[in-house]
Length: 251
Length: 301
Image (cartoon, rainbow over all chains, first blue to last red):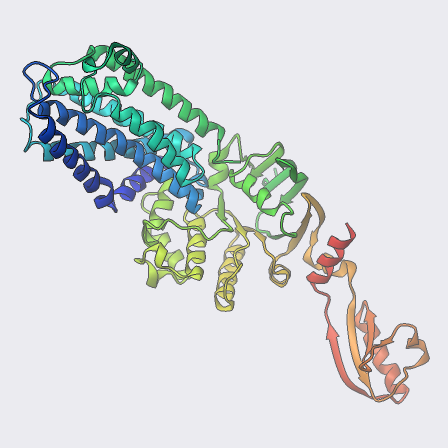
C-alpha cells in the first residue's frame, strides 16, 4: 500500500482542524446571501413557473458553496505548504503524482460536500426539502467538487504567492460562479449573454444540480453531465501533466 | 557481486538560468560511510542533495541511491533515503507525534508507533510529543526534522547543514545520535559549514567549488596532504642551534615556530636544544586542521 491514504487523511485533518474557518464560515456566508436575496426578491422574481425564488436560490447557493470550497481546499493547502516550505514532506516520500493528485482532490471533494450539506441543512428552514432527482443531485455535486478541486490543484501549483492565488480566486472563480446562474436563470438574460453562458461549464453544474431539486432547467442535464464530465477529464489531465513534469514543485 | 554503492553520482550537471550549479559531479559513497560534503555557499551542495532526493532534476548525469536510479526507480530510491532539509520547515497544523505518524504513512507504513516512540526518545522529543509544531523551539524543530527523515528507517541519511544555528548541547546530542546510526550501518552524507564537525565525524570528505569536486579523499589524507604540524616554543635565549636556524622563525613576541611532518623531528629538536643548554619555557603544538586544508584548496583551485 502506498502513501495515498496518509496524504488523503492529512488533507482531511488539515481542514477539519480549522472547521470553523473552513466549514462553518462558508455556511454562514451562504445563509446571509439566502436571507438577503430571498427577502428582497421573493415576491418579485419567479425564474420558473411554479417555483418560488427561495426554492430556486437554495440549490444555487449550495452549489456555489461547494464550488468555492472545493477550490479553496486544494489551492490553499498547496500554496500554504509551498510558502511554508513543508511541501518537501510530501515531495520526499515515494508518492506517485497520481497519488498526490487523488489525495488533494479527494480532500477537496469531501470539504465541498461537507460545506454543501451544511448550507442545505441550514436552508431547509427557508425552502421545502424535496429532491425529486437524487441521482442528478449526487452526480452534479460530485462533478462540481472534482472539477473545482482539480482547478484548485492547478492554481495551487501555479501560484507562487498568496496574492497570485487571490487573483485567481477573485478574477476567475468568483465571476465564474456568480455569473453562472446562482442568483438568476440565464433565460432572463439578453440572448447574447445567454449564448455566452452556454460556454461556461460552471453554468451546467449549477443548472443540472438545480434540476435535481426543481425538475426544471435551462439546459438538458444529460448534456450538462457531458460538459462537466469532459471538463473534469481535461482539467485532471492538465493537472496530472503538471504534477508529472514537476512544474514549480521539483526544479 | 559487490553491493551497489549507497550513493552513486556520475557526470551530474544542473543549470539554473545563468548559473551552472553542478558542472559534472561524480561521487561514490560506500555503504556505512560517514561522508562529508564541504564547500562555500553556492558551491552546489544543496543542489546535489536535491537531485538525490528528487526535489530537483539533473540536466545530465546519473544519480542512484542503493542502486536505485532517482528518476526511473524513484520509489525505491526515496524509500532508501532520509533527508533532513536545510530550512527549518514544519507543518503548523499538527503536533510532533501526528507529524511523525503522517510522515510514516507517506512511506506506506501504518503501524509504526514503536519506532516513532523510539526516535522521539533518542531525539529527546518525547516530552514534546503532543505539542503543536509551531510551539517548538528552533532546536526542537530541527530534531523533529531529523525524526521525520528517519521514520522509514532509511539505509542512507542525508543531512543538509543540520547544525546551523543549533546550540552546543543539542549539537552534541545530535552527533551522538547520528554517529550511533552510522555505527549501526547507516550511510551518512553530511554538508556543514562547521569544518571541525566534518573533521571529527567524517571518514571521507569531498570539497565542492562552483559545481565541481576539487578534492575527494579520506579525512586523514586530506589533513596530511597540505599541512604539517607546527610547534611554538618560547626559549630562555635569543638564538637556536645552527642546524635549526634555517627552519625556525621567531615572531615579534619572541615565540619560535617550526613546522615538521613527523614527531621524531620534534624529539631531535628538543634534544638539540637541551644539548645547547637551552631551556624550553613554553611549548604549544598546533595540529593541522581541516580549515587550513579547506582554505588552501579553495584558494588554489
